[in-house]
Image 1: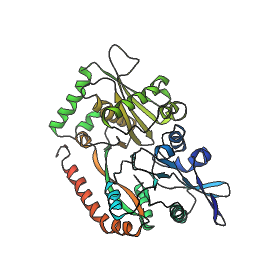
Image 2: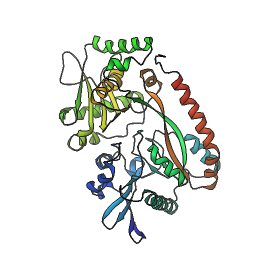
Image 3: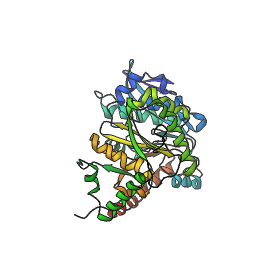
Image 4: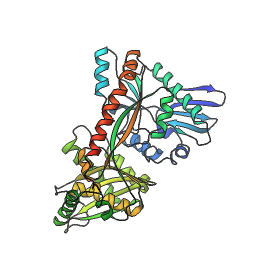
Amino acid sequence: MVEQIKPQYFIAWIQKIAEIPKSAWDELAQTLKTPFLEWEWLNNIEISRSAIPSTGWQPNHLTIWRDKQLIGAAPLYIKSHSYGEFVFDYQWTNLSHRLGVPYYPKLLGMTPFTPAVGYRFLIAPKEDEAEITQLMITAIDHFCDHNRLSGCHFLFVDPDWRQLMENNGFSSWLHHSYIWSNKGFKSFDDYLAIFNANQRRNIKRERKAVTKAGLQMKTFIGEDIPHDLFPLIYKFYSSTCEKFDWGSQYLTSKFFERLYPYYRHRIVLVAAYTEDNNECPVGMSFCLRKKKNLYGRYWGCLEEYDCLHFEACYYQPIQWAIQEGISIFDPGAGGLHKQRRGFVATPNYSLHRFYDQKMSQILRLYIGEVNKMEQEKIDTINENLPFSQH
């Protein structure tokens, strides 16, 4: 569907990101801190059949063009469920059910299966951001009305972009992630020094447990990652999903296979080897790097070793991050065990608009109270961080 919306602008809804030239898309995305809005990552999710209509993720990407130049874009998906979003909206689905208002299908803006802050509209730097944003929101409203979509939701949004969207009528819902920040550390010992004495001993004990088990840790970066490790990423990822997260294996083996030829320049792998086998790891964590940001995504092990999860997913990446001058490390979704290892509960937001009048009114009336309770939760978590008082 293509229509002219102003003499100089054209809007197009794209069902496959492959229909958009990679160079045109990445001209808008490469400048961002997040790697998860780059063409290759999003295209791989679709090409690998991880996010497609049959899995409940129907791509419908919004693009704005001036002549043949892409000047605005937003990765968007029509959703028939809320799986793979990591923002748990069951209270809104329950409310919708009680009101007799359909909640699905809905329009969603996020990188599928990726709870990492950074989502925003992609707009060419020389364009009027406010003007293009209004055009895109109007197009989204018309699209949702035409297709009878219940609402539009943007998850894990860029904090600078949030205010612009609030000014355009979207409501912010507060959540939190666990984030490690580099406080100018020069070594892992500097990082340890922020903890109280008891937690320093715990971390040292956990690291010694891995050494005592005879495991050797190796970190591989970008072009230096051996090709034969990439099929193993899927194996470890599947193993973890089977053990702990029933129903959460969203990515296919093809997704990981395509990383080697097309996206390994962003990847950091931490692998654990036994003393008698230095070729096939028994455990591995999978991270991505862009600029000064590091993102932990997946992890798995074939044998259970005491504290290997902490070493592969937290301590080794932090040690590498300090060496490389990384500023922020987002280890991915998870619980309070990150708090014990120096990851601070950090606010993040989603943005919401319901098209049903009752749903919209209730959202606006109560979201402030919901956010206040979440902020109190964040404050309580951070008051109990095991940091030194000096």
